[in-house]
Image (tube, rainbow, N blue to C red):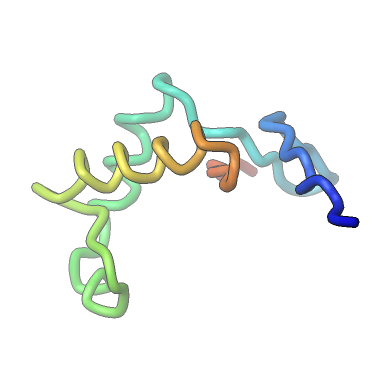
Length: 77
């Protein structure tokens, strides 16, 4: 017998010090600005989410979210 995969709920999560907000279209430009703050840091990653590569990054990330396997959060404090 195999178990059904867990359901991921794409909801905001709030704690005492931070709030996690699921990515949506309203966060696109704030996320772009945040990722563009340190171009050198992206040399450490296998994918590039800043500059000219942001649109592909955003599309791939949200594609994974739409398939139900990922949840992408913005961290707010």
